[in-house]
Every structure is written in structure tokens, then in C-alpha cells.
Image (cartoon, rainbow, N blue to C red):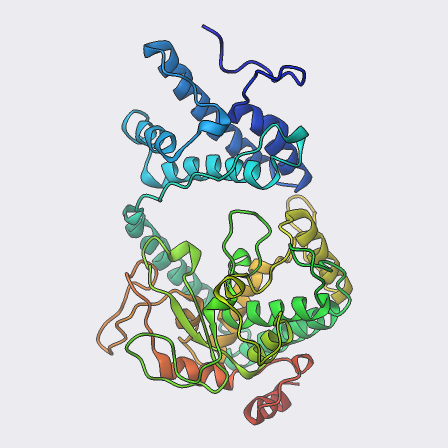
Length: 426
């Protein structure tokens, strides 16, 4: 029997490439060019090895044909996932990781297969298999959450004689606002991207500054806002409303600047409802700066479905530009005590900045804004905020917190309450 794993020959027109071929020739060079870690690359090797070994085993047992690249369908993914769970005793979480890895390779074939490698790895559409529920992770997650709370409490007690809470908190806020101001100013010198993924010109400065405002105000995870991989689904214009009344069903809060909503990616397995948040005047102003159409234009559904930051999907270019912003801002990066290498400051760290920023001005409000929250907010209830089924839409408290949040002067805030608080901070 002919092995399905033979090497692709460029002059062999009759040969139909496999997933393993696409990984070696198309996806692996992409990982190296994107400066992905050795652990990530090794993970993808495991995914492909598990895929190959399963179909090779079936071919030896009953002559099942190894699916070539263009034939891979949802049924193949489902059959392979069942094998991982039933025969190899994978947890749903690990099975989801393996399937997601194969889908990422296929997505690369869909987006670049017709362009790279002579077009040998082109597929029309990436098959997508729905994820298995992972609620069996909840007890472990909650236990770790309680551990971190206790560790922080002990650290606070140990440092209580050094700085008062007021002194410590004020110093942290001054430092954070200074960093955000410097990043914002540095973004005015950004040079990438100059066009969106469709080749239309964009204002690079306005896009980066708007992204920084949204990251710091709402705590988005990196690709919830800006996608640098083809698989991510960043915030589209259809999930921004300029209406005064909240779009959340059954709620009645109003906000003069509008609303946005999304389903946080890492909580989607437990909380499928969208998280609805009010726009601050600063966030609304920056979003209007990057609108791809005039204010009085009524876009159609296809235009609204486009991401707000519809940038070219390039991991390398995104993080290279981010590194240039950090360098321009002049941050003194700390060094790893073991290796001596500088510890990178990445966009994902702005989520922590957002949490501490909100909690300093209104203690306890941050989980309702960043996404870790339960819908029951009664006084006698202590919700498991990480694994709860729904978000707590404490609409009036969130509107008040967002509206009164102080922002760096560089963001050009104009609200009276913000200007007053900034006068105290700076």
C-alpha cells in the first residue's frame, strides 16, 4: 500500500498533498517568520503527529483512505476528536486544543494556500468543528482563584507597615497614567499599518491611539480587539451602538455616548451572553476618529460586519510596531532575574492596568467591566465570578464608573469630573 506520507514532488502533478505536507511547507515557515515560541511550534507538531498516526492506523487496519488536504471535512475532524477522547482518554479541553490546531493549519491554507508554495495547498473553506464544553475545569479554576486571593491578602499584610493603602494606590495610579500618556504620544509616530487588509488607506496614528484607549478602558484581550491571526474574530462595527439606550435586553440604562458589546473569548465556554458596556466620551471620540465612513452615512450589514481595526493579519508586524511604541515611550523594562533578559511589556498587560485602574476609583467594579462577573449581585450572595453562567449587568453602576473614570491628559478628555480628578493626580 502506498504511504500517504510521501514527500511532495513539485514535478508530480498527480500527487495530492496532505495536511502534513501543508504543515511542513506552508504553516511551519509561517510560525518561524512570526517568531512563535518553541513550545508553540512543538505543540503544532504534536497535533499533526496525532492526526497522521490516527489515519495511518486506520489505513493499516481496514484500508481507510487517508484524507488529502482538499477532502478534509468536519466529519473527519469529529471522527478524530472522538478517537482522542475515547481511545486516548483526552479531556474535552485537550481535544479542543488539538482540533483547534488542525483548524489553524487549514485556515492558513485557505488564506495563503493559493499564493504561497505555488498554490499547491489551496482550499476553498476551512472546516470548523464546534467546541466541546469544558465545565469540568470550573472547580480547579475557582480553587486557583481563591489561592490567588489569599496570596494577595498575605502580601498586603506583609507590606502594611511600609506604605499606607492610600499612598500605595496613589503612586500606582500616577505611574499607570504616566505610562498610558507616554504610550499614547508614542502612538502618534506609528508607521504600521498604513492600509487595512483590503488595501484601503487608514490613519495609523488614530487607529493605534483608539486601540490603546479601548484596551486600557475595557480590558480587552489582545485579539478581541485587533486580530493578527486569521482565526481571531475581533470586535466589529456591528457591535457598537451610538444609541442612548442600552442594547441589552431587559435593561434600561442610558448613556449619551453609546455602547459596545462582545463575548469575551476565554469565558465563552461558560458565559455565552454578550458583555454590554457603555462608551466613555473619550472612547466614543476615538472610535469616531477611525470610522471608515462619514457620520451621516448608513452602512449596510456587510460593512458593519467588518472589524473596527481591520488591519492586515500579521503577528510579526503587529508586535514589531508595538515594540517600537514601547521603545519610543522610553519605558525602563525590568529584567528577568534568572536570564537577565528584559521582560516584555505587551498589549495583554493593559488588561491588568484596566482592572487596577477601575478598582482604585470604584472598588469591586472591574470584574463587571473586564468580564469576570456573575449576574446575581444581591447583598447576601457571593458569586463564583469566574465560572458563573452569566455576567452581572449592573448597568447603572457601570455607566457611572465609566463616566467618572479619570484619564491621562494626553487623551484629551473634556468631561468636568475627569479634569477635576486629573488636577488631583498630576
